Amino acid sequence: MRLTSAVALAIGLLLPAGCSAQQPKPAPTEPDPARLERYLRRYFGWPDSVRATVRPFRPSKIQGMLETTVELSRDGEKQESVFLVSSDGQYLVQGPPLALNEDPFAATRSKIDLKEAPARGSPLAPVTIVEYSDWQCGFCRALAPVLTKQILLHFANDVRLYYKDFPLSEMHAWAMPAAQLGRCIYKRYGDAFWDYHDWVFASQPELRPDNFKDKALAFARSKGMDAVPLGSCMSLAESRTEVERQIAEGQSLGVTGTPTMFINGRRVVGAQSFPQLRQIIQAELDHARGK
Image (cartoon, rainbow, N blue to C red):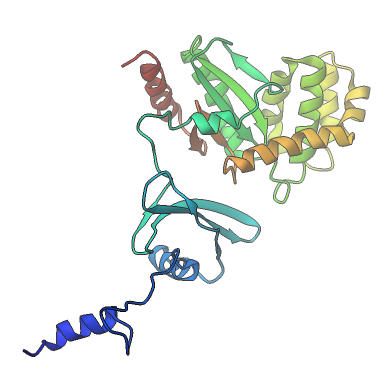
């Protein structure tokens, strides 16, 4: 009995030339990274200017699946995405696996150190917002009053806000000095940090690399702070190291731009509006109350 050409072609594709059905070609031990990159580049339409790096495959929590991280980079900016690939290299799923019996945000929260971060709001609040911010970022400036006024006022006993530095020094020339001075003020004057916070964002349009230090120290003096040690503190390597430690922490969480917030570990990117943030916070409160 003769096979149709279509069936013969299918068999020809499945079996290597010269091999019998009893001697199939051994399956690869893991998916092909180059094939995965080609597929993703076409699927998402990545241009040649975007460099894609497929990290080594690792075991996944899901049986029969492997996990990999694909890093995209262009013009100094990086972005990472997690993909699941079947062990035979035939199927692809975007995103890390979620275990239904685990808190999906617990792993993220465990990476965030809050011990030395300025904070506002009730220490017993069931919802924490950790913001990674850049003093020279216009979107951060837009978000600031939403967080410090609307959110903290509306959720007076339910939200605690933490500030983390993530200066984008390649784009913003005075963001790092501003972050260093903020650390100095916080360590010496505690909650006066929030006066500085509000002043920097309010004054952002007038601040430049050549006038930031003078204007900032003048503000500090107006609030009763000793500007001399603060000016010296700004130049210390220790202050820069503290900021760089926060940057590294943010990068470990996938932060690539500002503002980026983590609401009880849930990542929220950009200058969100009050209604958008209220919805997320209310969801966390409902969960905490067993709803």
